[in-house]
Image (tube, one colour):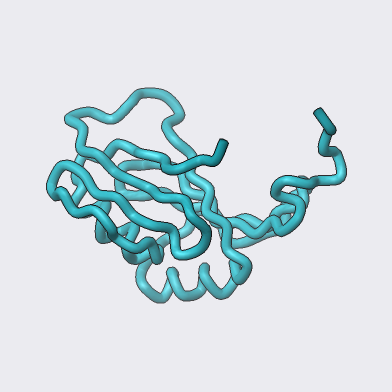
Length: 126
């Protein structure tokens, strides 16, 4: 089994589309103003956004995007006007992360984990 795509809700798919294009995702399905789908620039996964009239309640959604050049990516996005809630920093779970929110309040974590993404020292063998 392989993860194909994640779909998130948005109150304004048009504005959300521009935000995620600025992050570097590649638009592959344009059914604005109700739906869009992107390819991630690396790998085979896709990411889509669909229009809703109200956002889900609670803590919402957290989206992780991995990039081998995290610090450079953060600098580039800041130059494009993207505001981060935390700069890139090393975490005790052996990932380097930077945090931000999209226009609908979804939490985005840009990170670099390398082999520790799926093979941390504490990995269990099923």
